Length: 201
Image (cartoon, rainbow, N blue to C red; front, top):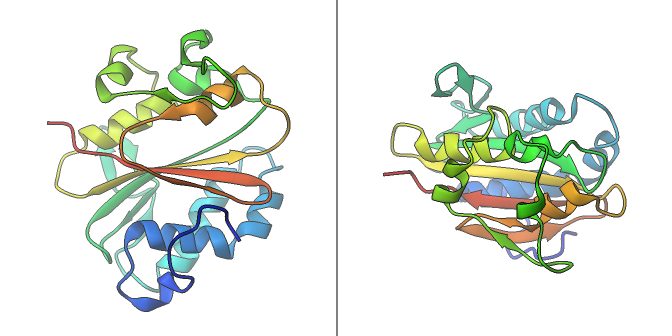
């Protein structure tokens, strides 16, 4: 069972669950296979999209993956309307072995490192926008959600594979805190961070 869990265990079956409850229910159901798939290369996010689709499509006929346009040609990872219109982006990284440029597109990430072990680095929309992150990076996805047109719930879902002692990128990605953070959930092989992203403007 995930540490930090505070929602009911059958959220996906109640018909009244919030999107956060539905997301966390999926992670509970796939904890073991996801922990295994995280060791694979170049398929992790697509596999996780498929698992969300397999479990949430029967509950929400509008639920889709890689179809809803966020900005330009970019498609959101998840979209649905069951618990209110929602769009979400998924990112999967690990505590070691990932390129620093995954954070913003830059190789130098010293200023995103926590000042002490286990510390946090609070990041606002303005701070993320100022670095002009490269498309596809973690902070670019955050900005894309905030800037998307329409009135909907927007979620950034981060899965951190516990694949060894953290290198600099592992320390930085674990420390980043945007506003409206859902309590961290810790599983055997990974941790899940989620943010409800406010609309910009």
